[in-house]
Length: 364
Ligand code: KG4
Ligand code: ZN
Image (cartoon, rainbow, N blue to C red):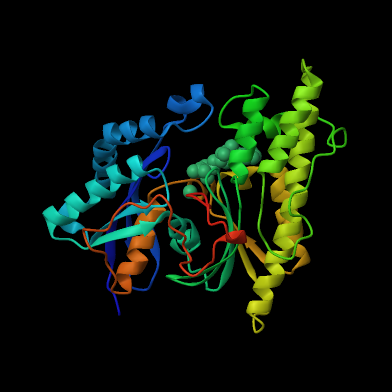
């Protein structure tokens, strides 16, 4: 379907960011962010060392209206100027999802606008296209606090997951290690800072799933090894903390290199005509310098181009949700107002549960 310019309001409330954005998709496929707001609830959850679902949902209720008004004011558009309303419908925390979804449905119903229930992962998967013409296909590595997976992105709505975590997400592992060491939340940046002055060779932590033929991740065994090491040490000196962080980060980096190599090989094998594969990296964990180095090395080794959205679009935001909605709207798609929130919602509907147990949760 040939589409003229589309102006879409997007809402994101799947985790601990309350976000609203207005995005325009021009007739030639170009994207433009007209206005956006992201409110992080980090302070609310910090005392608990992780996201508390009930607190998150309440904060979304408290702030969403204002953020939508502000994003629309920045964009200079009213409800009558919108072509559609998109909200994250999953995967994520149900309480939060319900807040954004109900809000978006209300606007769509009141204004008679198309409604789009967006998969949060599709938002991450398509962000590079919001930023400029980015050609399909590409390999997406998403590493955040909630997700750790590889997707082959073939087109809008056409995704093949070739790897995921069978337990914790990478960011979650960083956060849990930080919590064990009494460092603040979110843990990733703190662990990275400590690791910089530590000795990665002092502790030999496991490299879960390294060498396996697939592209999956596992972090819970690594986390247990870290916990046992901390218990063995008893009272921790500053150097102990730094060494544990350095050894943990080294283990994650080595696993990442191995898994990414497999994923790039698999992507190339699935696209034999492609002379230069494209790798897109998204999610907060990609900010880690040691991991970034590994990702750059593996991309270079495979002769792949490497792209990552800027930080504020790499982490959770509503512009990516509005954009995914706009891309789908341009294809003539929309969803019914009876679309329910989904705690679990694999982007790739055909992927079998990893290792058959199916307990992959929202993070997968
Ligand atoms: O994408 P993101 O901002 O949000 C969601 O997951 O929704 O990712 C946040 C995650 C947290 O788990 C945080 O600890 C991790 O990314 N993270 C890092 C670093 N910065 C953020 N992990 C490792 N090293 C970092 N420098
Ligand atoms: Zn996300």
